[in-house]
Image (cartoon, rainbow, N blue to C red; front, side, top):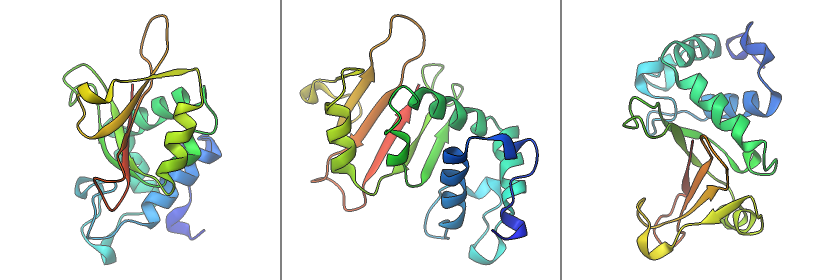
Length: 168
């Protein structure tokens, strides 16, 4: 890991799987995508910010808090977080009309993610004929009260690059 990819304190205390996802997203950023967004220092392939600058930006605008919250909710199903390849389009409660916060993500094996979601009794699947999130298979964490995890996986027949959404 180069010096521009070191996680300085307090970010060095983030859980390793979370750091790996952030670092992978950071490394795979190009001018052709918006993985962490132009506002976070990606002005082009040759002028990206350091990981320290990125983390400070994510923290100051609330996006790191969203990522951490979703990560913590994913701990209910430990095999869920490893399904995330790269983080896309983070939103906060303010941007989510005070209803949700979360992010989209790319997934290397969407069929495996779908199988995982359908194999657990921790989530229920939305009726696909009334999906409010478009052509996606959506799952909601079964909870008694409070925020719960919401996972949506874009149907394979719809896209060539698999994307999904996680939110609370």
